[in-house]
Length: 106
Image (tube, rainbow, N blue to C red; front, side, top):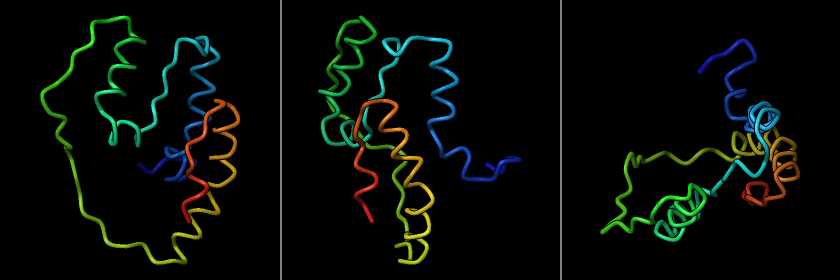
């Protein structure tokens, strides 16, 4: 995870998306919201199948894999992370024309 630009670099989606979108048109990207996948997996996957122009495949169940349990992050650390990512998240939302609501979660 450590890079020459720092460990948070991999968490910044916009630079990577801009690079990809310089090669491919926006219409060739589907960027689903992970919360939608968790809350409405069938509906979200139907959207993915439609985007890919493949037959819809409704699963019997949608198990949640790789679940973890995490200790609560202390307020100061959470605030520092929020402050660091705020402008990056805002830029991503503006660039994609999507709202993720990440900047509302402090």
